[in-house]
Image (cartoon, rainbow, N blue to C red; front, side, top):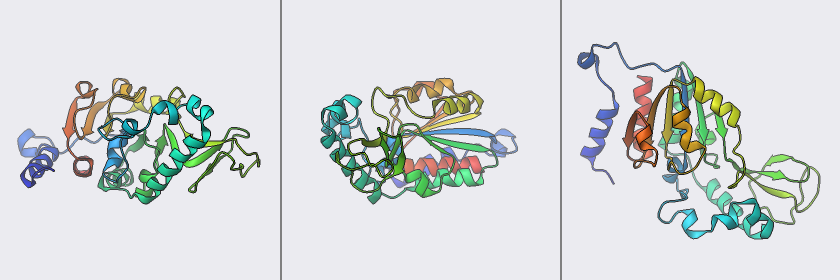
Length: 256
């Protein structure tokens, strides 16, 4: 846990240069901001990360619960895994970082797009509206038989019939598994090519293609992370610390 003095120093460093120090009129105003969020932004809400110590992939084999092949081998086990994750998601609440990004979207005069690797709905519950879930959404279900996608907040089982086509055995979580194509990629790459600020929050830098977004971004790049990611050296600016502290401070700096 950072000390009070360390938190004050961190907030001071995020406040940006004053006019007296630089002669500038104020902070830079960015017109097109793209923000990538990963598991680290939801960790303080009680939702576990994946690759850290005690993360999900230290307790479950991703080949069993996060691949099409694992689902084909044992759909009952995969449904049990996602039923438990759905309960955890519904019990969690947005934290200060989620609310800060929603405030940025609401108050910033330019465009703000949040691209999240997370399958939880904490951004939505905090108030974000311009949001792309590139890895799908935990609180939705998809039917392999008819293609219907529905919001789903209760348990789902191998025998659960699709509410749209009534076929049993065709429902699966509406999430992107390993070896599946992430969603909304055309829109994401177009936004990266047009942005003048790219911010990555709570990401490990392990998972592609998101790990390479910093290289695709046209504008200034910032990493906000608990600790340096695997791609930290690619960013022009970095601030490290708990998301619930550094994200609100960074948003305050952008809003001036």
